[in-house]
Image (cartoon, rainbow, N blue to C red; front, side):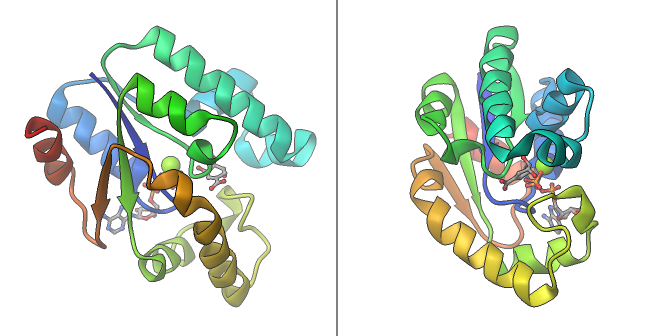
Length: 169
Ligand SMILES: Nc1ncnc2c1ncn2[C@@H]1O[C@H](COP(=O)(O)OP(=O)(O)OP(=O)(O)O)[C@@H](O)[C@H]1O
Ligand SMILES: O=C(O)C1=C[C@@H](O)[C@@H](O)[C@H](O)C1
Ligand SMILES: [Mg+2]
């Protein structure tokens, strides 16, 4: 089984993905980290040097490579990954796709407490700008996210919760 975690920046894909992989005894792969290793650059560097469009191409290519390499894995995708090309269909047809549906207020609080410089779409923005960016971005992306096979909503999603969901379906 392959498990994909999808959702907005700060929804907990990386954090919960690592925990879920341990529970399932599967390898854990973070798509953003994989892209950074392949490109030998950080994501902010890729955005700055090559632009978002190139990043999206690298992201799709990375998804295809990972699916070829792993039959069993928990893969945390990037926040925008399901929303470009036909990536949402690709994810749905290659694994169990779980949308982490965390309220935008909670996402905002988490991201403000983290290092915004690591997220090129947020760096340099004021608090107000981050808030309106997150709200608008989610409005544009929800139609992709909600096509995931599973949707888990709340501010306090746990890895055990995700494991149970997978076991009972
Ligand atoms: N369940 C949780 N409760 C509280 N804080 C959390 C929870 N999950 C993650 N966080 C915090 O929220 C921040 C973002 O989490 P994380 O990096 O896992 O999100 P992400 O979905 O992988 O984001 P990105 O798309 O930017 O990679 C981190 O600082 C993390 O510590
Ligand atoms: O929401 C997004 O578009 C992004 C989220 C991150 O995971 C990274 O993939 C990158 O910073 C873009
Ligand atoms: Mg992440």
